[in-house]
Length: 370
Image (cartoon, rainbow, N blue to C red):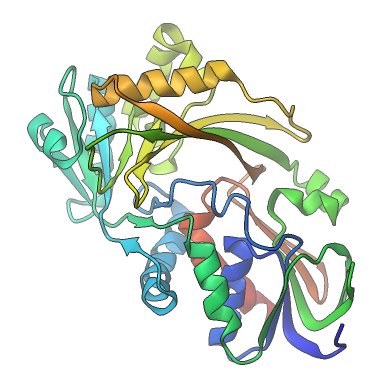
């Protein structure tokens, strides 16, 4: 392997690592990206393709807003779909309606437009049974998640001063040096974006952060003739996204579900849908947490997700064509940024919002390195 040095070495070619490489290139830096697999196969492709901007708070909201502009630009430059289609949030109870009304008050009608039941059913193909209304989060994006990471990597590889080392395991990291299974890789600065596998490289850092793996169960569902442009969120989503979870309506909803639908809370369900370019739906998701998760999927969780989807859409003609597990790093707070030595920084999104925030997070990290 060449001993030539780069301004920045990025460990990991998932969306967080790619975001750091993109920002470095725009600063005129030379970049080497080291990735253990021959392509991105982790959380960066196993997600909903949903940039949930409006429902974030604080630093995550600032990062998400910055990332939005980068996604739109990269979609054009790298040649993958980024749709400004927004998100429809469905309200099927008084508590859910109250949560959306409070969010609209906090964010303003330019970001959150409340919908009647008829408007909600027109915006998304949901059942009108029990439908009270909804909201449109107009600034949210939908990204072609199964193409985006590969397209961004291809675009980066064509830029001057950028090289990718695929299928290259990282054995250790020191100031100015990444030791790999193919030999040393040198760089003035190193950013480690290994996600939930940070503990494979820096176990003490992961342990200090209380990092665990969050395992998601997700489905690809065939729904003949269905068209869904925006992302579709439900009441359980209101319990997970910060700007909604902080509302009085969401707190009341959690209390009611704890008595009436405890299985949704026990599985930590965020029931939401997006549509792939071929027409199938991405349906999810459940959440379980452990440093070393059990390797088994739960058929009960899959049945729960499918039943919720049939009820939401008012359709029984839904067929599961794929099942998978997603995994992401989970820890206290939304982001981990650890300066491990003068030239080495570990970065992880620890809240499952990497697609939403990575292109805002990366510039802040590189600013701190500069």
